[in-house]
Length: 173
Image 1: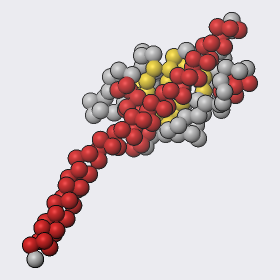
Image 2 (image 1 turned 45 degrees about the vertical axis):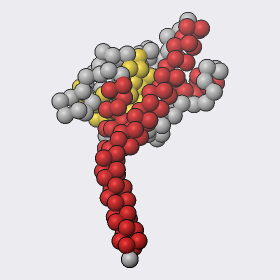
Image 3 (image 1 turned 30 degrees about the vertical axis):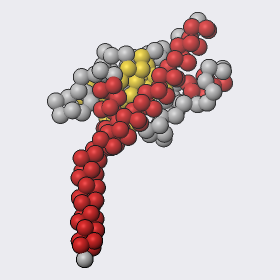
Image 4 (image 1 turned 90 degrees about the horizontal axis):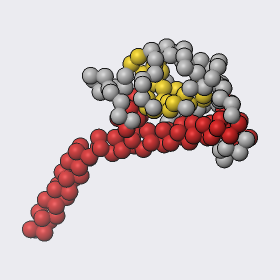
């Protein structure tokens, strides 16, 4: 009889510890997922930006802005990248070269990828901003402004810079 009681107590302790671990470590696991997506997104944009800078240096011509991921296809065709870059957080939107004012006309100043605003992209953008050393809003969200921040790379909440309200992950080129 005592073995049964010890077994029941053991099962109750195991369930209690499992619940406590899930409650305590759950947010940490979610944060790790956001950090992983943030790193992958910045890596894809940085790799594309570095390839664009190398192409500009070798050709002597400033990279022109593109649309619909044209820059990525051009860099692959020229041999600067093995495959077209993809935004790992939101693959539906291409990584593009954009001008100083956020349009696809003129000299490219940024390699950027847009992401629609959602809970997931907010976490990813916040992680990118933290990793880049950017200032955050008082509520811990990415900066909300109409022009890119002064930092060399990061993520911010664009208020119309590229024509709509979204998060922009970028690297200056």
